[in-house]
Length: 52
Image (cartoon, rainbow, N blue to C red):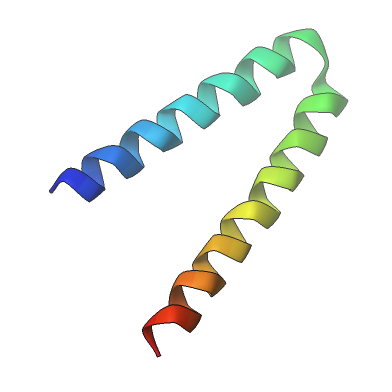
């Protein structure tokens, strides 16, 4: 329950940051979104590797 709440809070925070950057510069927000996507994939792969 707590992990799901923290995940939801993290998603909301990241979305707010990307939206704030998009108000300043859309290309910068797209680059930031791409970088954050890479971080998410790396975290998912690392957690999967640790469980097997």
